[in-house]
Image (cartoon, rainbow, N blue to C red; front, top):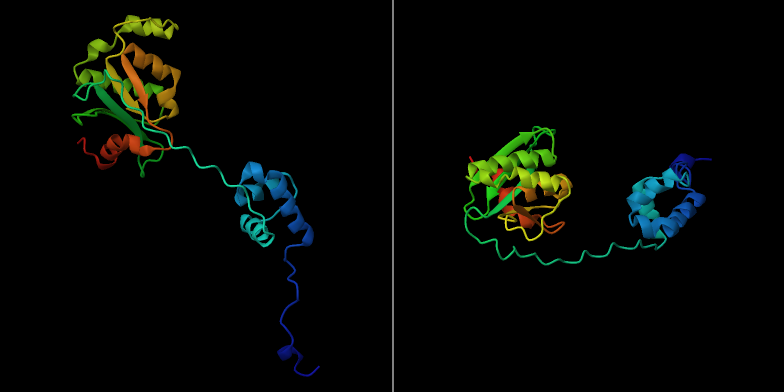
Length: 228
């Protein structure tokens, strides 16, 4: 018994909070059944808790899978999409191609601003600051932009009424006159925005999903305040 405290290994051989064998087996089973769907050790950890199969942290799931040599399937690489060219009628001259986007404020998280710019002249046409981010803000901002650019005559109320009722005229020379470039946000792709744009004789051109570089001009201006 002499010098036992000095010579003996401190603490138990197996920590009381160590992962149990059944928990390791449950993690491996979880990966086998849900790995193809979740494809992430973080999601698997939450999935195990939700299914009441095993309650462990995200890092524990990763550590066990690495020790067991289990590799989760990787997500396939996103297929690269070529940038769609502008329509042939959309000439690169001022007053034909507009670009717009929403931006948010770090100091005002519940507020946002939408800006409309001329792609060629880089003229800042209109801005609307709002607590909402819907098609209504798009309509208000574009109405102001058209008035600012001297094109309020494009706001054809009879045509807008026809479109709102689901009547789309064929071979109508009134459509389109302008091109609006934006990303694929829900407020840009909504039916209400599409009806308004068509009523104002504006064609829509959407950037590639996951490619913010397609809207770099308006993003730069809204972030730097180059519109004054």
